[in-house]
Image (cartoon, rainbow, N blue to C red):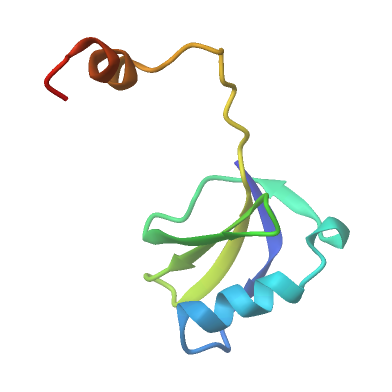
Length: 88
């Protein structure tokens, strides 16, 4: 997982972290291939390809390059079932 080499810990809410991330130029920031911190939760996606997470074990926000979904052009099983089942 590509995690940007920048964290923020001087904000008081998810909204402030998202606002900060929307104004940051991530294309100029280094990334590291690392595992996600153990205690994290997803906050939002900004700039189309940057995911904002909060590490609630260490009380800071970090940023991850969003992984692209490789869509094979086929519906997933849930969609196939929905399309097949006339009661849905």
